[in-house]
Amino acid sequence: MKAIHFGAGNIGRGFIGLLLSQSGFEVTFVARNEKKVQLLQQQRRYSVMMANEARDTELVRNINAVNSRNVEKIANEIADADLVTTAVGLGALEHIAESIAAGIELKLRRDNRKPLHIIACENAIDGSTQLKRRVLKHIPEELRKVMEESVAFPCTAVDRIVPAQADDNPLRVTVEPYFEWVIDCSSMLEGFPEIEGVKYVDDLEPYIERKLFTVNTGHCVAAYYGYLEGYETIQEVMGDAKLRRRVINAMKETGELLRAKYHWDKDKHRRYIERMARRFSNPGLRDDVLRVGRSPLRKLSLNDRLVRPAMQAHRLGLGTEHLVEAIAAAMMFDHREDPEAVQLQKALLARGADEVVTQYMGIPQKHALHQTITSQYYKMKHQYRPAIASRF
Ligand SMILES: NC(=O)c1ccc[n+]([C@@H]2O[C@H](COP(=O)([O-])OP(=O)(O)OC[C@H]3O[C@@H](n4cnc5c(N)ncnc54)[C@H](O)[C@@H]3O)[C@@H](O)[C@H]2O)c1
Ligand SMILES: O=P(O)(O)OC[C@@H](O)[C@@H](O)[C@H](O)[C@H](O)CO
Image (tube, rainbow, N blue to C red; front, side):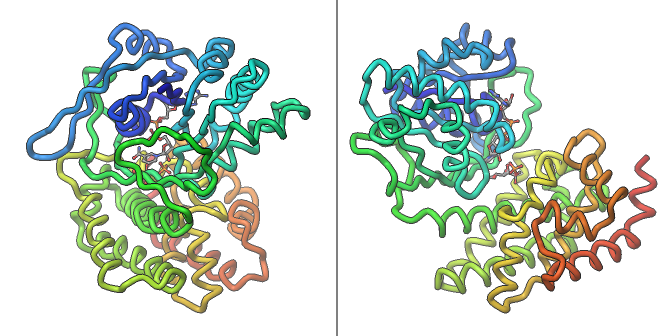
């Protein structure tokens, strides 16, 4: 069984590569960094350490690597693969689409009808569908129909906290012990080799929404308030009782929405929230506020972890107070080395919050949340301005 994985970063090595290798796949990483490619090619293995007391360690074997610029080699690898996975970041999917399409085209021209599944393991609703749309642009018209017979793009929800690594060994990665990987099997082709530890479901929506609107909503609330209060890590933020309460309150708010939509048991979901908060606090990890808050424009977009639950909750007449505050806090994220934070701050400065809420969040001006978010932002800006100014 052969898998090609795009992105030899934190989640790629610490989660996807690990589970695929444990399930018997030969995994070839497609990576941008030539040094990392060479190391993976030389060592053909790396270790994944658990952030638990025992520091349990797993060895990932049977791996190889190819540089992301080597489109011909990537296409050859994909042409006879069973699985392609990605963890490159949502914004980078457009950069890998052409290589994936080249592999699919080669596979079809060789008349290889073995099923190929392509799964975008990014934090997003319908990530694989978004990738498919980009790949299709590079597939010749005459192959598109036949492609459907042997190539599928099932969507997924992946959950494991893997912080940025500070390790002398550039391949080793430390991860939390917890993980959840759910794949939508309703769009899968027959004969798919199962991945150990994956849950296959017919309807992914409750799973991806539970993950994105609890783990990722709560996580980014911690990051954005933590940033405003001058904390460096999520662990520090969770140690601050006032901020921890804000994180929990936001997860409770999305919890009310999720329970209304999916009729979940109240106590069970409360325990899920508590468990997620304990994960954020894991003392065995050091997770930077800057990593968790990265790419604020993506996180503030209409279908992501803040605006989507807020819009849905509003539609159902449920509370949105904590989400609105978190959205305003996200708008304050002005880290100079984050290109999206810079773009956001420039837009706020040039065009004001009104336009930013419409343009980047997709909330029409006449929507009630538009006004609430804008006012909350100006209120918070006033409150935090002295703290922010002292940063520079
Ligand atoms: N780290 C986590 O806790 C976690 C958990 C679940 C999901 N995710 C998602 O996984 C994705 C990756 O996150 P991460 O934390 O591993 O980030 P990361 O920055 O550690 O890894 C991304 C990797 O993709 C590589 N990359 C970017 N463009 C590429 C290209 N064109 N070709 C090949 N490689 C390319 C980068 O060089 C980097 O190594 C994101 O969508 C993230 O939301 C992350
Ligand atoms: O990867 P992002 O930027 O979408 O979100 C940052 C973190 O919240 C995220 O990486 C979590 O650690 C992860 O989603 C946990 O499964």
